[in-house]
Length: 391
Ligand SMILES: Cc1cc2nc3c(=O)[nH]c(=O)nc-3n(C[C@H](O)[C@H](O)[C@H](O)COP(=O)(O)OP(=O)(O)OC[C@H]3O[C@@H](n4cnc5c(N)ncnc54)[C@H](O)[C@@H]3O)c2cc1C
Image (cartoon, rainbow, N blue to C red; front, side, top):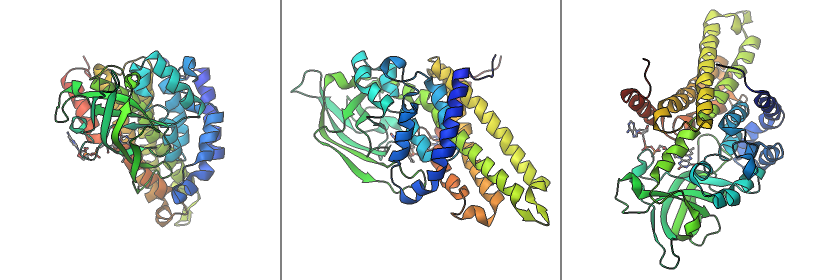
C-alpha cells in the first residue's frame, strides 16, 4: 500500500493550487454576483492543460485519469465550486464516449474538449425523472430517411453547461417510453447545431452560479447512426458513466470543505472575544478538529474511489466504494460550510465573507449525480449483496 501521490500528480497538485490561489480565488465572489460564465478561467484552464486531464493522450489529453482530475478539482473547489464544475464537465458528458464510444467518436469529440475549443453537457434528468431515471420520456424513433439513424424528441432539464455546450450526451428511450426495462434506454451524441434542438428555460440557482443550468429541448432532432454511443439499449452505460464520476463529484465536496475550514480557521485566530482570540476556546478547537478528521476521512475515500475508477473498477461490485465517497464528501461539504459560517458569527452570514457562498454552493452537491439518499440505497445494496463485506 502506498499513500504517496506520484511525482506527476504532486506536480499537477502544485500547479493547480497556484492557479486556484492566483486566478480562481479572486474571481469567486464576482462570478457569484454577476452569474456570468467565467470565460477567463476557462482560458486559464485550457492553457494549463487542465481540460484534458481525464482524456487519454491518444485523444489529445494528458491521461492524468480520474485521480488527476479529482486532485485538480479539489484544489479549485477550495475557492470556487463554479470553476470546479467547469473542470467536472470535461468528464461527465465524455465519460460514456470514453467507456463505450467508437474510435471515430473518440477521435471526433474528445480532442476538442481537451484543448478547450469545444464544450459538452450531459442530459439524463427530465422534469418527472431525476432519481427515477427509468421514468424518462425523451423518445428516439428510427429515422426512415437514414438507415440506423434516430429522431429524438423530449425535454431534458437541470442540465449543467447547457448554454455553453457544443454537443450533448443525451439519453433517450429507444423502445416504448413507458418501458421500465433497462435495455429501453440508449445514449446519443447530439450536436448543438442540429435542427430542432434549442435551449429552453434557464434555472435561477441558489449557488454555483456562472455555469448555466437549464432545459434542452429536442423537437424531432435527427441523429445519425454514427452518434449512438455504445449499443442501442445500453442503459448500463448511464450507470457506468455515473459510477465512474463519483470521485469527481466527491472532489468538489472535499475541496469545498477544506476551503471553508481553512477560511474559518484563519478567522477564529484573528477574531478577539473575551479578551483573547476565539481560537483559544476549546469549544471552537473541537469544531475545527472534528471537521479536520472528517476532511481527511473524505479525502481517503475519494482518492481510493478515483484510484478504483482509473482501473476500470466502476462496475456493480465497486459501487458501494464509489458511492461512499460521493455521499460522505458531499454531506461533509454541507456540514463544513455550515460550521464555518457559524464560526464567523454574523460576519459569516454576510457577503463580506466567502462562508455564505460556500454554504449556498455546498447544497447542490448532495443532489447532483445521484442524491445522498440514492447513494445510501446503492451502498446498502452493496452490503446486502456482499459487494462491501468484511470477512
Ligand atoms: C445544480 C444542479 C445541476 C444539475 N445538473 C445536471 C446535469 O448536468 N445533467 C442531468 O442530467 N441532471 C442534472 N441535475 C439533476 C440531478 O441529477 C437531479 O436533480 C437528481 O438526480 C435528483 O433528481 P430530482 O431532482 O428529480 O429529485 P427526485 O428524484 O424527485 O427526489 C426528490 C427527493 O426524494 C429522494 N428520493 C428519490 N427517490 C428515492 C428513493 N428511491 N429512496 C429514497 N429517497 C429517494 C431524493 O433523494 C430527493 O431527496 C442537476 C441538478 C442540480 C440541482
